[in-house]
Amino acid sequence: MMELHPPLGGETHTALFQRLVRELPVGRFLLYWPFGAQRAGLDVEIGFLLSKLAGGVPLDIRVLIESGTRAAGRVVGGVFESVELGRRTRYYQDLVEYRCPVVEWEDYEALWNAVLQHGRVAP
Image (cartoon, rainbow, N blue to C red; front, side, top):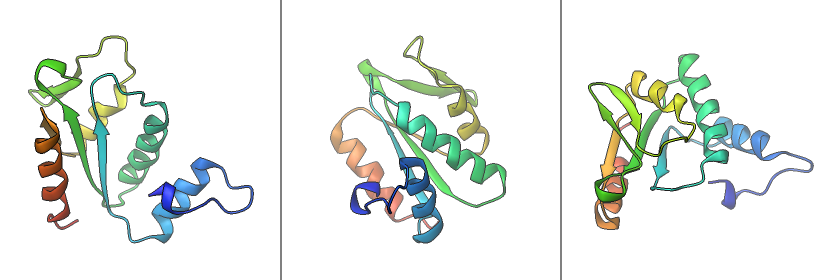
């Protein structure tokens, strides 16, 4: 979404993301996590979305996580487990606790189906 909207004069990436969430009719978010992904920017965005959830703002967030032989993580017994050791993933458990569905995908067809399915779910 950020690629489609240029920042206003002097606007940081953080401010741009926050403004777009406020101004656009955005209530659904897909957090795409393939194995080995660099997530530094995503972690900032997750923190912002979690602060909205903590403040009672209803958001429909799905975590699309690679599974199978290249698993990035999984939810076992309601607890998020990162398979990628040493990765900073503590806030993913918060997403689980806010009941954000974690959708596992093994190939791009399954990923695409998860994206399409999410588009049909009411926020």
